[in-house]
Length: 442
Ligand SMILES: Nc1ncnc2c1ncn2[C@@H]1O[C@H](COP(=O)(O)OP(=O)(O)O)[C@@H](O)[C@H]1O
Ligand SMILES: [Mg+2]
Image (cartoon, rainbow, N blue to C red; front, side, top):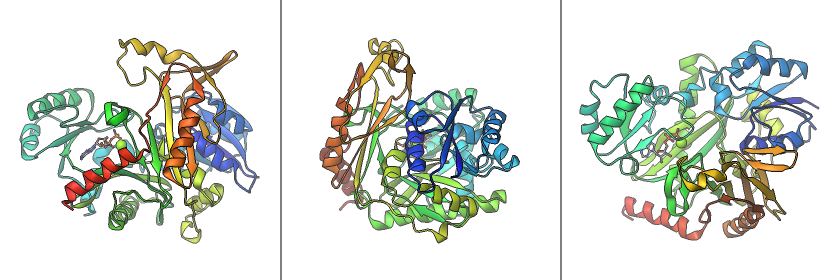
């Protein structure tokens, strides 16, 4: 009966809590959260509210509860050195130290690492700390993406054609970014289809999990502003219909080499999740970025499919023995749809923005699984906060069945909410297949 600490309060962590509690080791769960997630709370022996920027509060909670190991959900505590503080207190963790978490917290660090170790997958890029040379480099590239060097909650990257049209506008935006951020990356824009490849890593062995495709745009048809992710799907063969086996192998190989490079560079093994955001292009798989944790929503697609004991996986990550464990997933399709406040992602002066704090009712979600995210449980019921509220997941033998289960679950949430109807539909997936065919000239 290990006592396990889980840090995090989103739907991703709700799915992690569920995976932990399914363990045959009968663990006791101790959850440290920024806001009370009723789903996580219901699975926990004890909960503690506090800030992710306060490692000492997390250590205190861990010590009081004789924690065997910790699992860190979100990027903020990783970036704040929570894993380092736990290690000093003698508590191992699934999640990288602050230095290794630069894989996510600094896009410049990762681009430079990939380049220094001659790992494939980088675009043409340059890191700038002032505006000198930015204009020349912008004009060297056909089409550009500009990225602030730091955590932006998925809302800081600007893509030519989506967020701005001309190089002149790009230059203005670069100046703006440099006035707010220490550094800026300008890189070549790739054309292709994106996929999330979440790998488990113990430092030397990486294990791929089923591929997932997330949907960042707020509205159907990939329209509207970027969000934290409106939903995602995965397929029974654990691949994506627009990928060749070599595309996946390239993503795995990049991740393998990055794990080795991280060890050489920092002198310590990376223990946790290396989530590669990849894009399949006409020239093979390219790297958009890494995250140092499971994706949210993507965790909800893969963790419920795990056949292998998640606690055992964590123990092997910590021990550095992932190569000794066979990790298996159910061959099923999954569709995750996020229920969000109607005003989510919209400007504050939009008429729907008011819906953000309203009361909701959750009825019977049928065969779907429900993972709480940003909801506020008050005495008289459940309230929305300003962010994504509830992740609803359908799991079935086919994508269509999984989607229908998720749709039915979504309909059980009553209130001023919204979701993307098109996620997991054949039409949307066909669009991606056609796009890939076109750029590969097949
Ligand atoms: N080099 C690139 N080429 C094309 N699109 C890109 C590129 N880099 C980022 N993007 C787009 O911007 C999105 C966000 O960029 P990403 O690097 O994943 O940062 P974050 O998730 O932190 O916002 C990606 O999902 C992708 O759609
Ligand atoms: Mg991303």
